[in-house]
Amino acid sequence: MSGNPFKPAWWLRNSHLQTIWPVLCKRKIKNMTLERERLDLPDGDFIDLDWMGKDRPGPLVLMLHGFEGSIDSHYAKATLSILKQSGWRGVFMHFRGCSGEPNRLPRGYHSGETSDVATVVRMLRSREPGTKLAAIGYSLGGNVLLKWLGEMGADSPLSAAIAVSVPFELHKAAARIQCGFSRFYQWYFLKCLRRRLYHKFEQVPCAIDRSIMSAAQTLRDFDHIYTAPVHGFDSVDDYYASASSRQYLSRIQVPTLLLHARDDPFMTEDVIPAYDELSPMVKLEVTEGGGHVGFVMGQYPWRPEYWLEKRIPLFLAKFLT
Image (cartoon, rainbow, N blue to C red; front, side):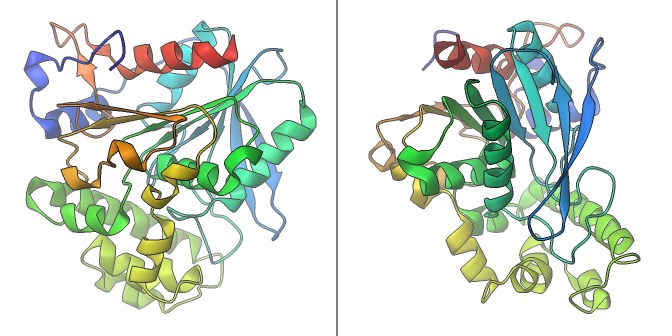
């Protein structure tokens, strides 16, 4: 465990409160100027990047968001602000279709899609070959990051990486989110997905019958109906098996920190990898509480502390300074 262990706020002991409170009480980050860049992809699609300190010198940190996330996710600008305070720059990568404008192709993003990350990293490396580069992935973005790191092995150009609240085994996460209060998150995600994709398919030809998307009652249903067939998987089980990051952890050759709460309501505890599954370059820190991308500390609700904003720069400083 790190030198600053996580102790959940007494007023947010419940895993759901830890998960929801930072979203509902999202802070306004002051003095944060972002510059958007559109990057055209080899297949004719695009993604949008939001830069903090684009034209300044110094180490650069790539950020990957979670499922249906964006630069407006509660952790996005807060993390960029912490990077700025540390003297680093940040570039926030939106997955296809998540930047507020529909992407051009019927396909979108998914938990195992690593080619877009590879494209962005190649671009960053070609522009600034001598700059130290790290990456942070949250939830789905963490799964994508870890899978890509495993695929790259010793060829990864990153100096370090951090993955937070990762669904290491997708089929278990899809099952867990159908249980108890976690069904609220499933309902919310399905609502966001339908709204975004219905809007998109008013402008882009749909690869499937749009009417069947409304029949999806669970995220697994949705992945069966849309994600798997549109992205070339034989089935939803094929998608979950091939896209899960747990099987890639032993191949990672970059210093990597995994931060995970044992009570994460998006998945069961048995998704947490055993230490003998990890590459020697991977460090796993499991807290008893913290929820999903929560990790809120502090004595008073009006003066919260966010553990991730302490732990992330503490780890990255070893490799970026």
